[in-house]
Image 1 (cartoon, rainbow, N blue to C red):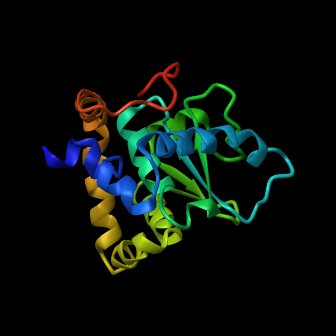
Image 2 (cartoon, rainbow, N blue to C red):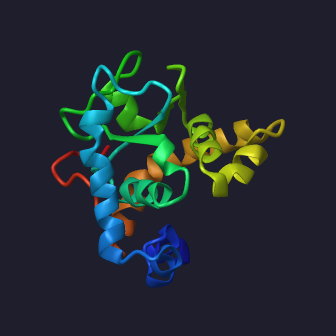
Length: 177
């Protein structure tokens, strides 16, 4: 059960002390990221940035993205909550596809989803690059994809359990899938 506690996801007091942020400031950081979404996804947005699409109506997903957003290097990422009806998603990706599978758009416009999407995300964050390197070893990405596909049907249940431990969705008006 340790993995489901909010502490695991970087929201505990010791984690906040590590970065000098209060719990409230860390929470506000996630909302500031969401508020910046409109400016970052306009037609003249910087195309040299990696875009991470996530389901903000899912408590588990929101906590996980908040965790990643708290790390050094996250300023090179654009986080887009696809549970918002006005989310600008871009070409070759539907809102439903982005809700169903974790998806990342590389700066060159290519999409990576599932395990490959996580590998892209990890590769952008200095403290997670080691995991991206491990995922790049022969045979590891297919195993991670298999694990991700096993996780997907369990996501709604795990998200409910995470909410019992205090995880809150960023977007409370959307519908989690």
